[in-house]
Image (cartoon, rainbow, N blue to C red):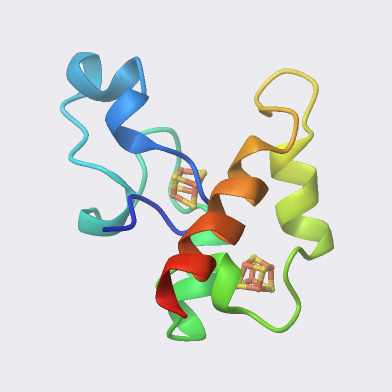
Length: 88
Ligand code: SF4
Ligand code: SF4
């Protein structure tokens, strides 16, 4: 079961309880802004997660994954690869 479009593990997110967020795939918009460009991009293309995209891992996803303050050193990209592998 995937947890987000970008590969983030929402179940391990420290903001989940604080904000009452139910997780990327079940929300319309993230608690941190009007829209998440990664979530919108994947959903517009009808992908369950970015790993299904032919452009994966695109520049936008890399920006999110390797952002100095908000990023996770690329872990979410690896997570998308893992989810993609489970689909085969
Ligand atoms: S950053 Fe965007 S795509 Fe990733 S979990 Fe948050 S809302 Fe979803
Ligand atoms: S990999 Fe990039 S282009 Fe593909 S769905 Fe994700 S954000 Fe969009």
